[in-house]
Amino acid sequence: MIGTRREDGSSIGTAWMVTFSDLVVLMLAFFVLLFSMSAFKLEAFERLTQSLSATFSPSTTIAREPEAGEPGVLGIMRPRGQSLGYLAGVLDSVFDRDERFAGTLVQRLDDRLVVLLPADLLFEPGGAAIAAEARPVVTELGSLLANLRNRIALSGHADPRPVAPGNPYPDNWALSLARAAAVANGLRRAGFARPLEVWGHADTRFAALDSVPEAERTRLARRVDLVILPDRAEDELP
Image (tube, rainbow, N blue to C red; front, side, top):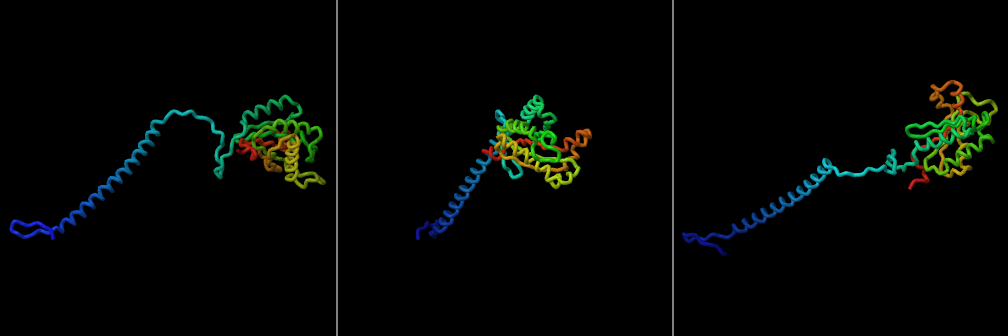
């Protein structure tokens, strides 16, 4: 066994070198670990610095209006259709010039555009077939809407009075729905090919006309609403 000797002649073993070598290896591993941890923290610190710099010193960007609408309940982004304000102006102008649309009202709401078509403009009393003299009105309306990308619904309404005995429609629900469907079919025949939603409300919205004079209130209660929504029809989605 190799070793050294003290001054008094006794020998010193070399076993301590094994322990010393293990200690050096452990210290080396410890320093490598510290270095790797410090490198990771440095990278994270740099990312944090860049994020804070972007927050407090933002770059100048040009904002543009997105083509897509706000996500719905399911998170689906629905593309926007044509501007409701623009459409309201166009329809108002057309209806004001054409006396066939006398009594038609255009109402701009926050989330939709509603065209109120009084029933006496379109139908015989108690009926749901479009009168012969009203067919050109529906045809003209279909032509105006033919190139419109927006989603559209037809909503039928009635006053609270029950239908007359012998009427083919048992109640105001059936009558209001049949009238909305008749206008929808008329628009299709005029060339409007996109999907249409059809609703029947009977007299459930009659209270919304409380502020309207009684004679006009009764007249407007019997109507079909053309509802233009801000998003595109399904067949217009990209």
